[in-house]
Image 1 (cartoon, rainbow, N blue to C red):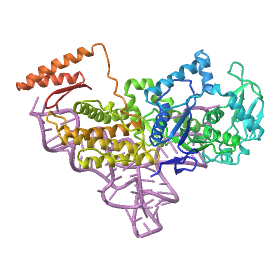
Image 2 (cartoon, rainbow, N blue to C red):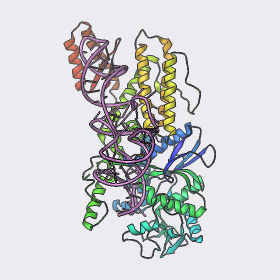
Image 3 (cartoon, rainbow, N blue to C red):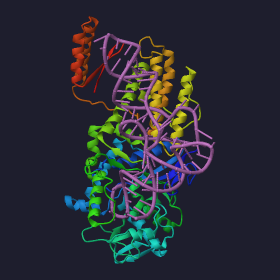
Image 4 (cartoon, protein in one colour):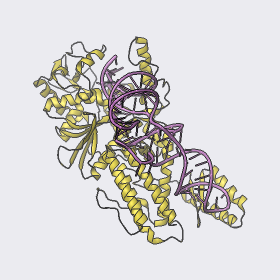
Length: 521
RNA sequence: GGCUCCGUGGCCAAGUGGCUAAGGCAACGGAUUGCAAAUCCGUCAUCGUCGGUUCGACUCCGACCGGAGCCUCCA
């Protein structure tokens, strides 16, 4: 079955066909670097990182661009609030963003173009648009002429008439149509500014992406991604500018990820308000309620760094991928903690494998490209049949518009099968039939291969390293030894006392047939 | 008011015009264990409501109810 991708433009899944065979160009709208990233900012990168991993696995050569918006009203305002230069703030926040991406195992981004480094390219597009009559200057600004663009609104499904009806005040008096948006803004004193044929100023928001995508990826790209909130006006405008400029389709597939929502956010009164409607009072109340629901204004807005202190980044990544990318996700600590529990079983399996197989799960070498060769090896045929079925189901899910939620389910099935294999063949004991080991290794390798596509289980988790670690381990071995003696002598009250006290210290003991294991938590 | 979208077991969540509607968390029963832990086996849904289309719908259409996002430079 071929890969199918949901295209916002057509509102349906389409067969995936690239502009150039074998190559994929992908553009994702990046952050405005004015404050530390919150979890919502990680959703797009994690999802598109996974998409890139899967496309690469499927044999495509992918080039992925994420822009950095380092000139913008919010940035200017915040810099002046904090008394630092726009440049310094942007640099600091960009670094924060990069750090977070690394922590989240987002590794596939090939280019991070900066808006301020592409002013010339933006001006070229604006000049072309002016030349073709798609733009007009107005008092030091330059506006895009929506009326001139016949299919304006095709991405978000809005018509100019509808927008006319829905628009309220605050539009620049001289604009020809309220929907017209700024390509170039004349600058006020003290703001970052560049020379231009239309006076000193800075670019409008939308033009950046058009210019950088065009420069790095070309006039027609394969995938343009972003949060659902960017569909209108940002993507709509980007699309309008780019296509009006080049006369070519800008992006084949527009992909929008669902937004993270803070569940249980204060003021989540939902429902009671008739949206933006009638009376000004209601309007204010509705707006307030809406603000409260926004991630940025609620407890979910804790910076990702704060979140990393509470949850393993791998758990967070898994949590994001357990739901379909187009669905909204309710964020809450409990939910992530639940995902953490679900992952425990995998880590336990990896430990078991290391004990049984003699080497680390993480050191297994996996296929980096998709192959049609059946998973095979010496051992029970039913076992291999199951492995093949899991791989088929996994790939089928991913081929269906990157259904990571379905793929995650397969991972859990595979885990169960591997655990069953270990327990059926008593591999986790001294009397293990070592000939079954190769089969287990093949299964573990498949698990690693499939998990790698999601960008999880790729590296051993960093253990909390501290100066006393050697001491702790030594002490634990001593305690375990003492308890083993007690158990041997049927002195269970002492053995249980030790175990219970350790539990209170958040240490869990696991008595196996030939040894006792311990772990924190 | 306009434009998108969603409503699956206690919670989260995948999915399909027709075999027994994935999986996770929680719960319960059992195996295992000195007792636990871990693991395994088993139990746990008719898919918001009402109509319609169809031989047949949870899956298509309509209405209604409930929820979300956007229309106002949040990813």
